[in-house]
Image (cartoon, rainbow, N blue to C red; front, side):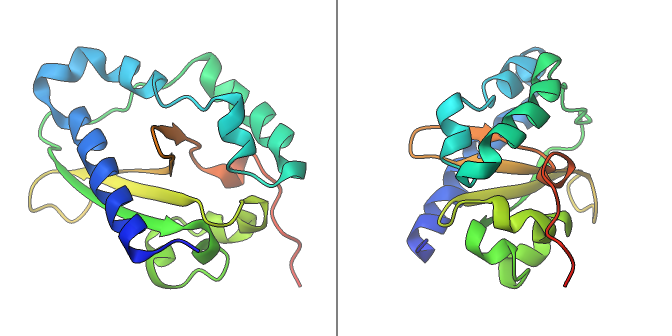
Length: 158
């Protein structure tokens, strides 16, 4: 079970890392910073259920052939971040409600007790900005699995 302390620690670590993307002195490094979030083979196995690992790997292989540069505007210097245990994404309650709704349909593919992040870069005092999701927190690094509902099959409707 993911503790509140683990969620708080993940929030602080992710916030520090993501704030680097708003540093005007690091704009030229943005693509390299995105590439640094590429999941390792071990990350897939530590994030997805065993029968979903290869489906996820195949789906994300397209993204990682040509990683995107995150189109953050120069004045989008504020960060709004939410962290959530994977166990919360299926019921779509609490913190999970700040994630895209697509997570609810693929939550059965996720291993329990993994911390996921969704975030937004926005102009200070703005209500909305550019949104991202799919950052997974590991002890010593992060891996980015954006919009997993695009690569994993949804749960059958009951």
